Picture 1 (cartoon, rainbow, N blue to C red):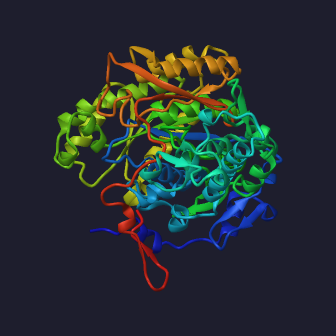
Picture 2: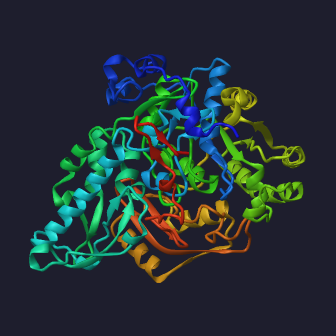
Picture 3: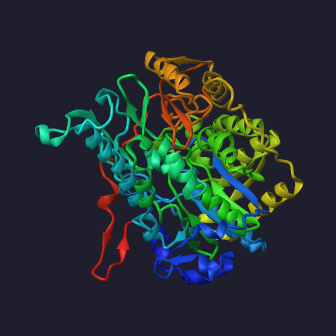
Length: 554
């Protein structure tokens, strides 16, 4: 058996963060070191923003329980670009503690395509998620204090601001707060969400600077008064203190890959409930200093990819130069009907059958003006016939497909992919086209995503969703972008429908207004904003020895 991710990380030689910053191009005066191997970069480093960079967006087919390794491929691709003498950096999300301790594990890549220091990044890192948790809960505390003291006209039945915690804890999905009599505020129902689902997280990741962050924070809606008008953070008069808590969290974090590629790891919104990519500041910082920047969008292209191109790129005035879609033999077999317990059994027929899912994502990418490159991420269980089946089907459809083995071989295993990416960039064959105009009606924008991206037949709205639409139009939130919330495990809103579902209706249960990041969140299907722990959580495996060495992270 080979080395585990954390064992590989422990055997790696780290370069001092000051040297990494020098390689990246950031002046020493812009650096705020957190020890020897990680640092914050001050926003002043963007004073002379003049990007001449090629942004490479990495997305994937619909994810499965078999795993796809999108982050590993992103890091491996960046290392491969370095090996062919490109000035490159990485921009990725930072992990949330809940999934790290739960079922997903860490989010620092794997094998010989990781970002380091792996334990720090996967655990507390530089404290960003703690700051976001505190800022979010400050609003909660002041909101309830204002309710208790009757300082504002706030309808306690229409408070929409929850509390957050950076941990998977299903027991907090529904709570009763304010118990204990008249000195303990007003009793009411509430709930907790995981910090990555916080509107503060999404807001920070789309903010341009402190001024813009404060503007966005002021607009956040905490609830509604008895006339059903929004009560905002501006009404609570605490925008300044909220942003003060986020002072350091707004600065991107600089670390390195296992092969010394500078990596900006910053922000971590989930793609099934938010926009699923790192902060715009981190992406722009990387683009300002590197000729090539590799970033990723969470889950499949129908979620993270669509949101990146329709919303993040538009709001940030950036545009990818190339698009990579990650696929695996294992995931293709799952979409071809193979059960999870049979995933390691050779089945070239199921691989070919499952390509119908990848085909839809390629079509979607083309609607945005991109010719995607498919990265077939290799696993040890893949057979030659299965790999040949995937390649044959892709080539017959004239898709570019490159086999990669960046987990095992690091950058060396992604050189062919890197060369294909450079070829795509230099050909200037990709030109971003948004799928909708922000001035369209909300229903039109939702319908375009549902029909064009998911393949839905129609969109149905519940009574709650229809009431939300009236509220959205009344308060002029209708020009916001759309940030769909649905399962990541299917193109539809039913996680059991694998492959390429057809003739299905998309049901919208409600539409949440996120006025900070300036997007609307239509809720389709059952979406948990506070995950639970599995029967055997990763927390049972993680340990630390007497010398302080951590084990069990993956």
